[in-house]
Amino acid sequence: MKIVAICGAGIGTSAILKVSAERALQRLGIEADVEATDVSSLHADADDAQVILTTAEHVPAIGRTFADVIVVDNILDQEELTEKLERALG
Image (tube, helix red, strand yellow):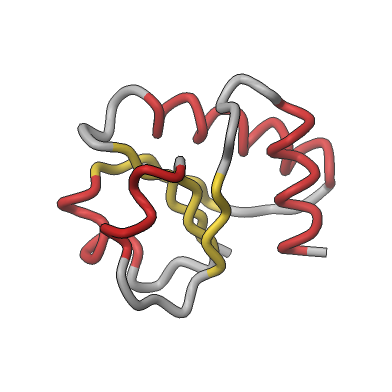
């Protein structure tokens, strides 16, 4: 399974989401490759992703996708991300 975390530049929010997602997946016992990228590289990096993690501001840039888009309200809230991943993948 592939999960892609996105943000504007691909180094801030997406990096935090990547690390948080890896922790959440480990806790849930789910194996996945998690990548961080920027919005402009999204279509090249995420065309085979099952899940896209992002904040609300970047949702319009995603466009059409077969991936589940998970919007994270608080990128520092590990519980929120864990619950949302569990719902999407469970």
